[in-house]
Image 1 (spheres, one colour):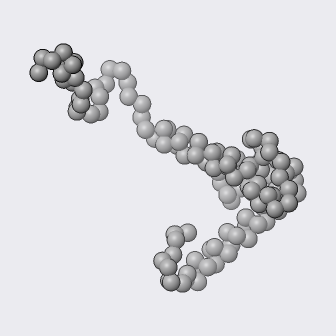
Image 2: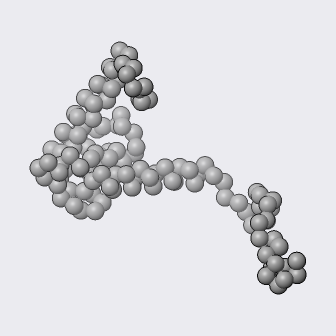
Image 3: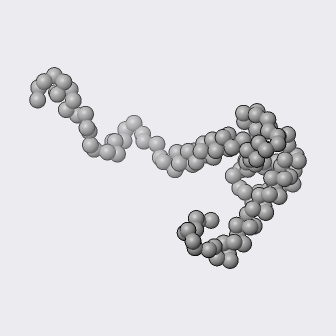
Length: 125
């Protein structure tokens, strides 16, 4: 959902979508907290009490609509590990979309800022 302008109320459709997302998340989060120990699956940090809110549900396949009842698509991650996981996923998507340059291809840029550096250092210029 796009952020709303200050002072501009959400329209009815945006309110319904936001409420549906909150309810869906609440449902699978509650199920995940019943299924799994309250430990981050990456760093092993344990959570309880007020700090339990820092333990998040991560969808292994990154599809928030894939919520099997056995929790096989979930893992509990702390806020830091969850952010890291999504950063790694975004980086992997980006690098897959960026083709690698082969050694026999010319460079994609033609500007060579240090081309005359050798001559400058020798005092030839």
